[in-house]
Length: 327
Image 1 (cartoon, one colour):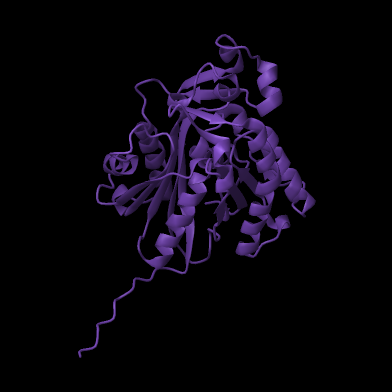
Image 2: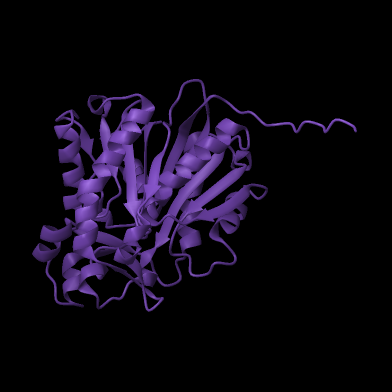
């Protein structure tokens, strides 16, 4: 009997990092006062409950794919690579109107990465952190050299405009990051998981509109997400005091502040910068973390070399977090 041949295995670099970031938001600004003309709400009511001042809505003919192309192209340009260098494109989203064709292959073709492996990923608001973890592992395994992760959502297509509890929160946009090899680790291990027993707290009502049990989700997020962030730090070999910037999913400003408070109680510094992009961007689900990162980098509140702790959470319920070094 002849000996079975051994399969060859690919092997990549020992470390990865984010090489570039980019984002896109629609031009249409919708204020709280604008919404008060459509439903029983007010600017103060919205600010008090979720911290949002304004958000961006895409036009009817402005598609999720269009926003993903814009954000992804900017991230590739920021990385200094050519689009053709990207050999994997991961597109976290939960609002693509059709399952077939997926968004990723369309985006890859339009940005000039037509030969890239391309797939959508649905972990809702945790999607970007899931995608970043997968991209980093693909590069380290040698399955990909440069991976582009784009969180993109057009949530306004899935929100009941008469549902005051949810219509005030969600918005549209896209954020992206390019992942590639590094001499030193720039992306820590992903800490992820799920709580499927709470699937009923966020779902599609009538298979059409996003619905969430606000109080249940608030209680879960304010008690369970800080430990996930701490786990991400532990996996990366860091302490809370090492964190320069905290970027949680921009779900609700009160949730963001509660997570930051718990981390500071565990040793995070008082001068730790905390993302509050929700104030002017709303909740953009899988786009919210990369949007916030790009906005903060542009504003100078996060700098190259800063230790950034990211943690996403949302429908599923799914959650994920990791430490990255800002490019």
